Length: 334
Image (tube, rainbow, N blue to C red; front, side, top):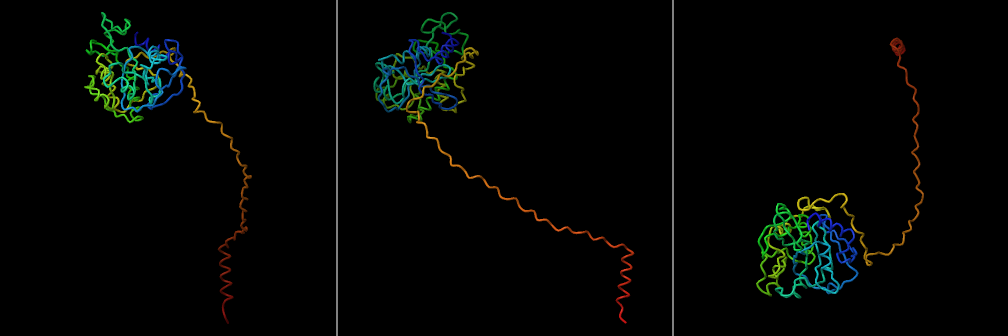
């Protein structure tokens, strides 16, 4: 299936939350973990695909699904089959929580180094929605279902590396890398898991090393027959993103480089979130506001009127001379 078709299918799933088996999910909670990245907690009407038992987490395991989100969620929520992971990240950067990361389900398989039970209980599984290994057929790269994934010339859609019998692997999109990095950091802080990435994709040396490991590892580290994830460009970019400051990523925005941008017709609205019963608060009794006494304005200041003064007319020069002569004559003593 081509990348642009995958995006349309992802948008359809986000709109109606129905998997390929016709199972309808309910959106129970949306958690914003920063940088515009959100976790959508979705649940079918049954919970028999995981164990409702809390376990201590000391590591995170990365997988890829060899599919797309609609079929991925089908496989990860099969009724009465406890094989699942807590999180799935699609190509547009949406993160779906399948069950609480404090609980567990098998996700490593029989023969896993360290033991499927022990390692599954102490690790949080993250599935990255991705078609994984591709085979060359003429000018096309073919997915595991014998459909065209992309042309060999479309190098933005795949990584070329030889690993466990394959030469080509579908790459993560840039928004998927950023969302997965944000999720890993979020889980690291929540469960006190260090950002200690396994240095390569080789299996752990023995059971003791696997069980003692704290950090982030890959399915290839516990299974020699698996190829998720090969230590190539996509995985290296993810590791680098976990040590850098994450760029701002808009939720549900397609990667301009590795995923075709959606047309106006394919844009989808966020599904309605169902509010958990425990989160609903009882209505508060309205507060009765005490009536305030009417405001009394202070009386205006009385204006004190000043007495009017009649201006004194200045004497003329002649009048002044006559007055002076009179004073001189009348002031002599005999």
